[in-house]
Amino acid sequence: MERLILNNLLKWKNSKYRKPLILKGVRQVGKTWILKEFGKEYYENTAYFNFDENEEYKQFFETTKDVERILQNLMLAGGQKILPEKTLIIFDEIQDCPNVINSMKYFCENTPQYHIACAGSLLGIALAKPSSFPVGKVDFMQINPMTFSEFLLANGDENLMQYLKSIDTLEPIPAAFFNPLYEKLKMYYVTGGMPEAIFMWTQERDVEAMQTALSNIIGAYERDFAKHPDVKEFPKISMIWNSIPSQLARENKKFIYRVVKEGARAREYEDALQWLVDASLAKKIYRSTAPGLPISAYDDLSAFKIYLVDVGLLRRLALLAPTAFGEGNRLFTEFKGALSENYVLEALLNQFEATPRYWSESNPPHEVDFIIQRENDIIPVEVKAETNTTSKSLKKYKEKFGDKIKLRIRFSLDNLKLDDDMLNIPLFMADEADRLIKIALEQINYKTK
Image 1 (cartoon, rainbow, N blue to C red):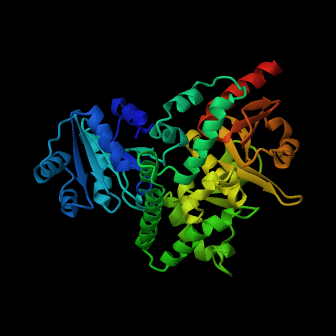
Image 2 (image 1 turned 180 degrees about the vertical axis):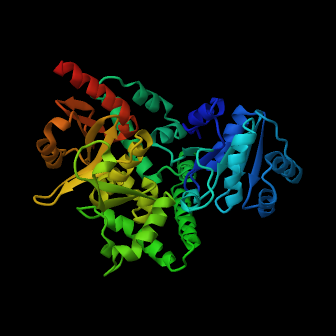
């Protein structure tokens, strides 16, 4: 299966400022696979060292900081050839190896001719711990679940993906493309972006195996909860994790601790929630009070929403059966459109540097699903899971903040269209949002000149 992150890895390889790479991503998102594929395609050979399978390798980093000696020991122990510039060295499952992480400083300073890529599950947790971290001596890259575009490639629909990439005007998409893309998106909501689940559907067409794959991934994550250093936090993490579908099923999706457990208080559960966020299993989206720059300056830290790392995992955790795939718009509208919001958020996180926020006010009640910062523009985004797309909240947001808002975005099942300052993007084009916004802003600026 083709992963678009290969392009970023190739840029890293060719950069004259290259440092040892730390590839972050949740368990079973494809970190090891992509690094091995990258090594196979762009290097003479790959030297792979797994610190979970071979714990004795850790000792080589405990006794010396001389990286040439470390590599010599690894070559002898693993029987793997390591050549400067020509070998990709992969250190896998490094989350429990602080000495390995710290050694990246010496690889960076003393032997930049070696190409090193590190990976591991729960690396976000390991890196959040106060320890001797090689600040400024490593490059970071994030691998997320497969996007809808990557799903199309895996499903043999390269023609549909190429069509989406070729769109350069904000005109309605012909039914010959719109209808199959709409159907494929329903399939993506069912599988999500975890590579094994996509493989079971696109290659095997086996719904039961796909369901099992998602269940196994959720089970692996739940076993990881026990790795919290404080045993008392384990049940709290589980309760928060299992509450996420019901949090998202609410009209107001603001995270409420009492949904986790009756009488629960923030101070009792906030560490457990932060563990899920550090592990990248959950995404925390703060409420924004106003459309200012930088977007983070207007965060209301007391109000936030929580989403899952992957739309397929959210569907599976909510116990929504794949049969909903055949029931019209049901997948898009299920539990207040939560699957659609989760899917759009994943697409936005892949395209914009700043994490999106959301906006709301209580009297009268209005909520804009996401607020994004694109360069120096703050843009409100609404997700509508149906073709009935009247949006009182986007209208209210425009009335309230007026001249600060150049463009409003609505993701829906309606066709592509720019109407004054309202850009409607079909849900299946979420991966193209940044490019479409650029076209829309250019059009708006041209009209106002």
